[in-house]
Image 1 (spheres, rainbow, N blue to C red):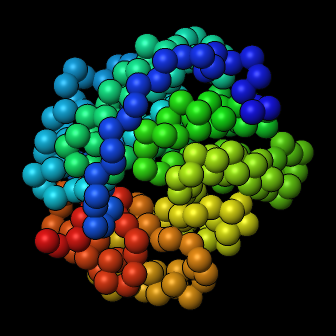
Image 2 (image 1 turned 60 degrees about the horizontal axis):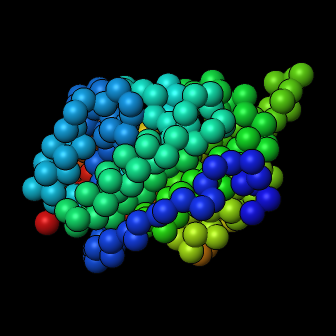
Length: 281
């Protein structure tokens, strides 16, 4: 692949991934705590507490979640950070020890019966906002070749429209770089897995269609009632076309009673998955 020129992924022994689990409905909980201070997507960080991933998997399995989400690159979103599979500088040489560490996490999650969705980029990460198109595309090419056969879906990144703006001299010219997003989605789709996008608002659904995503991980904001969820899902359903819709951010604590009620309402209105709560069992 053109975008992998000069990287270190070829000719590496890649162990066969285990068979993915069979799951009826994808529901995960990547935020916990009254202020969303627990970021379960961050457990591949080099600074993550020992055993945090295994402990989370056990608790989430007991609770009834069926999917886990995991950053493979995160410079500054939440804690702990950073998460990286590079040896040093961002977009530099790949560290295969870090890659194998992430493989082990993914395989452990599959072994516990979870689907796994990895996220290529995080917001609040200055190096990602400064990245050139070439760096972005090389990075997603690496994600596709290193992880594409081991995971069940791939999300291009969190709040992509917030930090991938076109370089600008006037504020109103700072529009999202949808062309590079489209090319990145194309590369990730070579894995044969569904590719998701996530933006700052569920109302950006037309952008998800424009870049060719399979899934729209819809950010609703912190909802207070089931009726709010139903209203937003109805709005999306009128515009979804062939997109899968996943209710991605709607509650700060994914294990709360409110999160369960909101996830149940989302599923009842046709959501294909929920990522900060699970429907009633």
